[in-house]
Image (cartoon, rainbow, N blue to C red; front, side):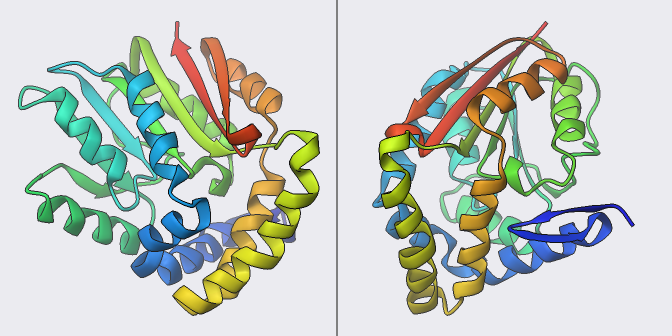
Amino acid sequence: MTTTHFGFQSVDEAEKARHVRGVFDSVAPKYDLMNDLMSVGLHRVWKAYTLQVANLHEGDKALDIAGGTGDLALAFSKKVGKTGQVVHTDINEAMLRTGRNRLLDAGVVLPTLVCDAEKLPFPDNYFNVVSVAFGLRNMTHKDVALAEMNRVLKPGGKLLVLEFSKVAPPLEKLYDWYSFKILPTLGKLVAGDDASYRYLAESIRMHPSQQELKAMMHKGGFGHVDYHNMSGGVVALHVGIKC
């Protein structure tokens, strides 16, 4: 049996996707509210910066992986206009359904489909921009997923990975206290689920550091890779350009 991490636990690789699905099935109904509460609204600033770096233009094609409740997909759709295309995907049906309904409420109809980032059902060299916000750390084979993202990008296309990362050393104790004491309590009070938010805190600790992820992206085929720390390294935006 090949094992991988699910938070701080070791689980069978084949079972990780099911465990992660259970977490997001549970948190989907309160996901947006919890994001606002957990980040004190900062997730909106992080995503606004991601949108700026994406630099999408009229007619561009963008793929939002692990798109969840659809906020990035919605923002992308306003940039590419009627002649462009934004595809909104997630491996979790409950999250995707929540996102699709949110997009429809905003009067936006996008291609929305359940798909695994490790096996993307899109042709080679198709998208100008691929994004994955707060989803890469939940993937079992990150290297495979990054190679797939590279495959579907056009030459010169841009991958944007927005993810929780390693905080600056002076913030570590405060961040640990907040992550393991406050977040599960908040999850229990607001979403009725402390265990899922404890997993989210643990999964952040198991995610590669800024430099490690940069190296993984280079190995996945990206010629130029850079990252931008935000909020003291709580979050980093990695940007990879396909050769």
